[in-house]
Amino acid sequence: MPKFFVSPQQINEKTIEITGDDAKHISTVLRAKTGDKITICDKKSTDYECSICRINKNSVIAEINEIHKNKNEPNIKITVFQSIPKLDKMETVIQKCVEIGVVRIVPVISEHTVVKIGENASKKLERFRKIACAAAKQCERGIIPDIHEIIDFNNAVNMAKSLDSAIMPYEKERKLSFKSAIKEINGSEIGIFIGPEGGFSPSEVQLCAQNGIKSVSLGKRILRTETAGLVAAAILLYELEEDYDLL
Image (cartoon, rainbow, N blue to C red; front, side, top):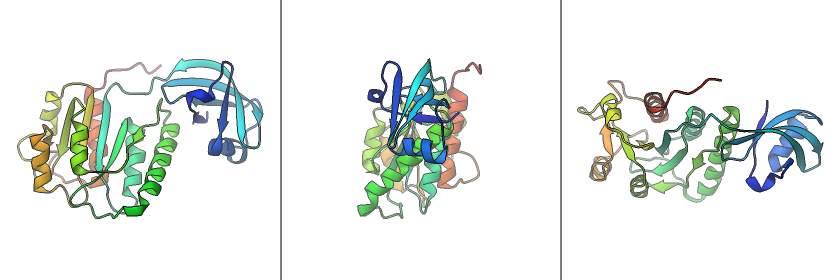
């Protein structure tokens, strides 16, 4: 069943109004008709099972049939601080991290970041957020994960201080394995720092250490930047997420 996200103010007692690109998608791409079923989410983990009752030029009105809590959000809240990689790899990172359950992705300009953002920052951010929204619909999330504004490495480290724990997969780490580090993680809000193609600089590794962000090894094989965050987040969710009811 197709899923769409709306703001709470678009939800009335008995109906929900969908506007903008989603309304156009419903009418022109899906070619939906009156009576068709759709799921609408308020971006706060409440799902509304609805029937389309009216299709206008710029909006779609759906009647609410059933309301229930979305059960697809993990209780482990992971933030991925991703140093922006080359080409369209950042888009892949966002899409896949949203699919597995990450709640926030922070694009970071680190010392070895090659990509030049400049005046394109707002356009890139808009593109990143559209990808996150599409991925959240596809995998039936209860929220649209936050794609934070692009920030530099120092600000990323400061931002991580508000979390319960943070780690930094680092290819030169030889003492602390990821498996051991997981046992030391406290709390439910966890940050993961991922470097660009050239990795973290020694000064960035030192800055993280000074701020309680532990460098960890993901194993003997060096992963690409677009792979490392996905792997680390998936392992954390598997190891720390509570068992859930499949029904």
